[in-house]
Image (cartoon, rainbow, N blue to C red; front, side):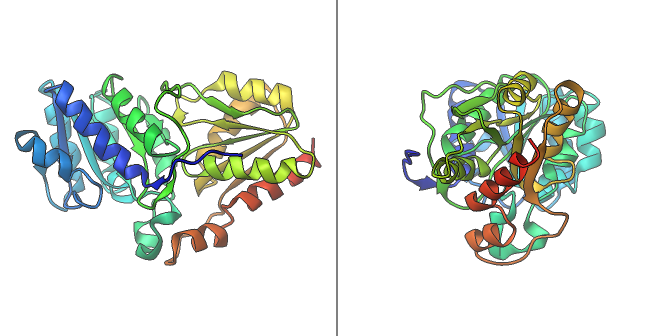
Length: 315
């Protein structure tokens, strides 16, 4: 049984993480794009007003100013909705930040289908794909509030650009403060040798719940939290393929180019096994209540369990 310690949105982890960093490192600088209360960076602004800039609705300027601060020796964190943080200034992230390997940390809040009523225009479902293809960019998708805070703190001490993806809706908090977190290293949350379910972000909890559904059918599933999509933990994926012989990936993102694709790239080069991918199937989002949308788009525990039954037939 998965132990849950309440429900809180991962965006709180980002807001708390940057405040913790701000207290210990005077080089931490935060920039927003007129969504500062929504993405919870207003707390940093109140404590450190001289290390905060709101650029307005101008995402390209957001990245450009962060790049300039990085050149001056600061460690800038920017945050706005993920669809705008990654999409609108993409060329500036590519050429100004990544090409120059600048120390800019980008927070993509309100990511995934669970933005809910805001609809397709505000649901970042392609950000993993367009961020992970950029040379030098690290991509982290933490599974709950506690892990988001750890990701923020760890990214400050990781040289070069980092994209951290998190969400608005309250979700279960199920990891502890003393749980290990290292950029690029996956965590095995549940052991099993019949199939491996590898997931990121909100889908990690759904994966754990699906493993409980499968256990009632006599299927023992290994569940792996791959919070870092780039650099991905190839060793953990290859070991899972060798031990289990089949893999299901789960992500709150388009299946094309996203997390599942990253896992498949590792497998085809090293140890090919049958793979099923749970994710958004090449379609735009819709307005609706978050959990209703998760069901409508096939992103719940039962959908992962169905994918496991499907992949096991190909094992």
